Length: 313
Image (spheres, rainbow, N blue to C red):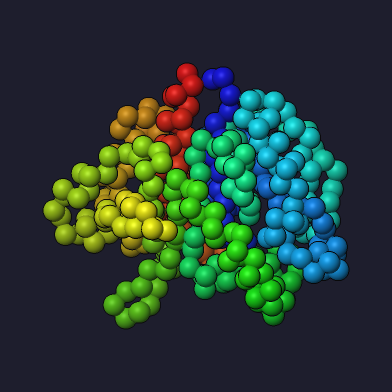
């Protein structure tokens, strides 16, 4: 390969970027993947942001010019000296020398905010969970891992909302795939197994696998769990693939076959004995759950990265 393949994963705070990034890196092999977080390019630390009255979501609070320059260097296979921001302490640490691997995953808040940065990606993903679900995730993460109280997290969410609306959500338009995990409710309005469904908006900006076979399958049980349709997203026509949180292994096998059929590497990934962590997620009480919607989302994104790799062999 003449250069690394670069994946972008953009979304608001606690939208699930790191979880998705970790899973994809595991599929591709951690030794092959370099992960970059664009939060490291903050201009101000936590104390300075509070004094100035600016949020981390605002472009003026980030060195977007340096981020764009570093993405351009990584795209050509060159190393960078990357800044490091600690979410735990809210301060900056010593920069680190980064040499790109075969694949580079760039996740963060403002990864698509400039034209130059957008041009550096081979595949662009945007995470868009419902806002009430994202709020739950943020409260859980920031109280357990960053030392905040629930009241502080909710106040921060409210303070950040104008910047989310103005600077974060508009980046959705630049993505190739929009990923929206959402709760699955039964007839009684309860989310019995704790699993999330997923809605995947597939833009025609990159060639997606041929999922039309799903439409042709007349099995009612299959159609209730996996659906393919047409819709409009931000005013433009898109395909939409939905995978229900209650989908069984048998129901998702067909979709996995479509993804893995022409990808020898993915055939190995689809073998759960060789990749037992595929689609694994931690439940609300700390237990490990098997999420087929997450597994298929990981496979689809990996499929596109491998397709991009084939173009440079």
